[in-house]
Image (tube, rainbow, N blue to C red; front, side):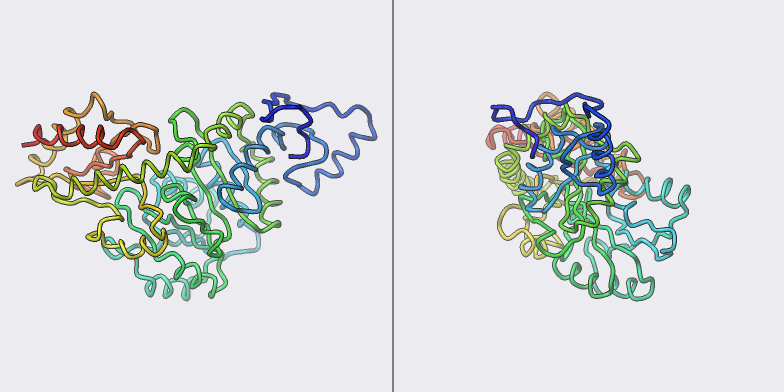
Length: 391
C-alpha cells in the first residue's frame, strides 16, 4: 500500500469517514482520478470508496490467493452479490448458470433477489447423486449458452468435489466465465485462478478469519476490468468492510495456512475414526477412498489435505431411532463440541443437517462437523466418548 508512512510493522486502523483534501485543486484531482476506480488510489476521498487499512488487508489476501488483486466486503453474501453483479449488463440476456449444490444462503439469494427482484434468467445444474457429470453440464452449457457458471469446489454438506480443471476448461471452451466459491477448500488446498477461473470468492468469516468473531467476504481475480467493475459496484452499494474488521481480519489471515493445515489433519483423523464404527452408517469426507469424488479431490488438492468438514450419519432401524442417536451424540459431546450455525471456527462445532436443510437433505441421523485446530488426540477422545451414548 502506497500510503503507509508510519514507522510501524502494521498499517494502523484508519477510521476516517472522509479524508482531508486540503484545497480545491487537490479535490478536483482526487475526484477526476476516482473515475478510474483504482484499487489503491493516490489520494483517498471517503472510506466507502477505499480505505488504507482495508487495502493493506486486501494485499495480504491477494498474496494468500496468489491473485493480482483482492477486494474485501462486509460479508460473504456481499462478496457474492458484488462478484455476480459485475456480470449484469442491460443488453446481455444470457442466463446465469449455478450448480444446485451451493451454500443455502446463495440459493436463497438467487431465488429471492436475482429471480424475483431482478428478473435474471437463472439456470441450475444438478448432480447425479453424489457426483457431477461433466457431460451433462456441457450439454446444458451448449443449449443455454450462459454468461457464466458459478459453483463451489466442495459442496455443503455432502462434500461433493468437482472435477475442477476439466470443467473450468470446458466452460471456457464455450465462451462462458467461471466464478468459484472457494470457502470450503480455501487457497491452501487449491488456487482456482491458477487454473483459469475468472473470479474466486470466499466467506472470509470462515477459515480466513478462523476465529468465529468476524464477518467478512472476499473477491479475488486477475482481470483488471473486472477489478474496476467490482470496485465501482462495491462503492455504490456500500459493500465495503469496516477498517476495524479489516485490521482484525488481516492479523487473523497471517496464521491462516497453519490453522487450516491442522484442521485438515484433525478432520482426516476424525473421518477415519468414524468410518470404523458400525453405528455410523456413512461418513462423507473427500479424503476417504470410499467418497464418490475422492479422485476429484486427490487431483485438485494434490496431497495438501482434504478440508476440515466431516459429514456423517448414524444408522438406525427407522427415522426415529436415527434422530435419537443423533441427538444423544450431540448432547454427549456438548461440553466440548457445541452446536453453532456456522463453520471454520478455531474450535470444533457441529450442526444437525435435517433441521437446517429439511427436505433437501432429509437424513435424520446426519451431522455436519466443522473441525477446529485443537489437539488431535483430545478431539478423537471427545468423539470416541460420545459414541457410547448413541447405543
